[in-house]
Each structure stands twice: as structure tokens, then as C-alpha cells.
Image 1: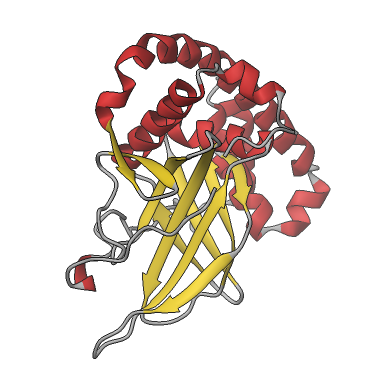
Image 2 (image 1 turned 180 degrees about the horizontal axis):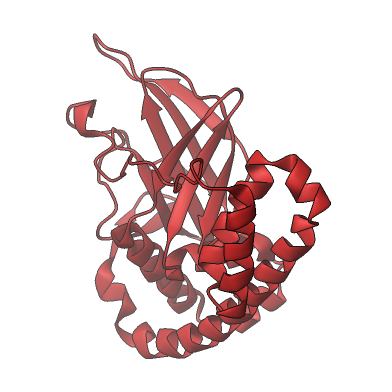
Amino acid sequence: MITLFSCNKKNSEGPSIKDHSNKFNNEVLKKDYSNEDPMALYKHALAHFDLEQYETGLEKLKYIIDNRKDLADSLDLMTLKEQFESKLIEIKQKEDAVEERNRKERLPNVMQNIIETKTSKLSYFVDESTPKFDSRETFHAYVTKSNTGAVKLKLKIKYIATEWLDIESFLITVDQLDYEFKGVVEKTETKGKKKYKVETFDEVIDTLEELNALEAIANGNDVKAVYVGKNTYKERLVSKEQQEAIRNVLDAFLFIMDKDMTYIKSRLK
């Protein structure tokens, strides 16, 4: 595996922290099927499969699996879940091929959406919509390039609250397919009269699995994030603006690398 991508903290600056979460929507992310008969949901899921409505069917199937283990076992729902996921993966692969053609058309103009800042050792490339202040929650990708020419693609997720979540991983659901990010989550506290707890994930994307996940996030129709803590979790919607920003950064990464995605993926584990 080649080293493509590094990590440096961005400068801390910013206004009041009270608006830190304005990039996120905290509404309930999952539909509530608690008043529906599980066997009816199961029949609905089968019908959705026959009608090629795989996302809706899988959502209902997951609800049964999560809430009725007895039915999950007796009806062999895990096998059915794999069949749904297989169909969704086939659809995603076709969409990826279309996206690759679209990317090639975008590349000549991609840097017009990117802001570059420089330090003595690194250049940072972020989408123009990326929060400018460290006092904001964020979910964004960025690229660094060292003076030696080493280029790295990174994902930064920042969670801010009045209590620690003790984040252990991030589960991202894209059109009913699940992706996971794990790594070091740094914990800090803000200064001032009211101290906020800040948990920051800032890791290099350097495996094929992670790169595929980031591409899925950028191009998905429905993207939801679960920040999995030690004892509880928090849910977030990944906005269309954030998706577009990640897509722009992926384009910029390829432009800076002067490589296409097929080449990059061929060099990753």
C-alpha cells in the first residue's frame, strides 16, 4: 500500500459556540414501525423485494431484526437481509460507473470549489462550504499536501455537547447500506464560563474500505450518521451540502494526485 495522504490540526478560532451544530439536523432519523404487526412488515419486505424497492424493504427488515430476534431466527431474516444488500450493492456499482464518468467531466473545474491554505510544512485543501471555525460541529473531508509532495485524504468529524459521548466509532448508513469508521477520537474542552465537550475524529483515509465508504457518502441519496459512544449514541443527518463538499474534495484529491480513482483503489488494501 502506498502512502497517499497526513494529519494536522487546523487553527483554533471562532465565535460563540452556541451555534456549533447548525450543520446537523437532529430530527428522528428512523421510521417508527412499533405499531405495525411484525409479520405484516415481513410480508411488506418480501413485496418490496419483488417490486425492486430494496431500500424500503431493507429498512422494514432491519426493524424486525433489531426488535424481534425470535422472528429473525425463525424466518432466517439475515439471509433475506443479505439478498437485499446484494441487490443494493449491484445498484451502487452501476451508479459508481456513472459517477466516474461525471467526475471526469467535473475535474477540469474542480479547484474552483476548493480553498487552499498554507503553513510552513503543509497545504490544506477544503471545500469552500467547510466551517471556518473550530467551534462548529463538522463532518467533512479535506486534503493535505506536504512540501515533499506527499498527498493525504482525510475525514474530520467533530462532535460538541455539554456531556461526553465517549465516541468509539461512527456508523454511516447510505441508502440502507452500512459503513463504519474507527480511529482515534481526541477529547478536549472549550475555554470560557461554559465548558463544552469536544470529540474530534481526524483520520487519514488510506484503505479501500474507507475510500469506498467516503465515495458512498458523497454520492448517496439518504445518508445518516450514528456516533456510537461507550454507553449511548447520537444520530445525525449528513446534509446534501456536506455530501457535495465531500464529493468536491474527492475530485480535488484526484486532481492534485493527477491520478484516477481506479489507480488509487488498485494501490489500497
